[in-house]
Image (cartoon, rainbow, N blue to C red; front, side, top):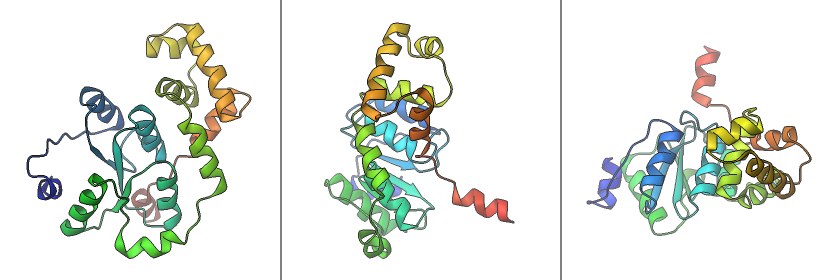
Length: 206
């Protein structure tokens, strides 16, 4: 990507077509410094992709890329661990400035949206849920995603290559950490991270 090369000429770049591919790449390259994550990458389900990457790779900075420009969506992304947020209409200079800032461990927001975002308060529920989800271990988060997708304990055990009793132990810990009583409530909490894709909304309105 030209924007990245403009900041670090010898940067090693990898591209992924969906969230699972991004996870695989991060597992192969855990020393990755930055992920540019499309808010609506296939398999990402809005903020769920951000939260899953942050849970599995807490040392990797994640900058969100999106057509969403409403301050509340940006504030939510920051609450759930994004290091920066870039709109899809950003020009090359802005992309390079944003990437440079995040690599320097600074938070980045689009210049034209900074004032509005700074005065937008994160919802109490987002702040609370972000803290709860951040308390889950990477394996517990994987189990939670499977639960939200309607998988049973035996199916989860087979998918993750672990014992069913281990899944049950993870479930007990997940319920306690999230402050929920059952699988349905746990799945509903995770589903609050989903967002509608504005580009699809435009197409549907035609």
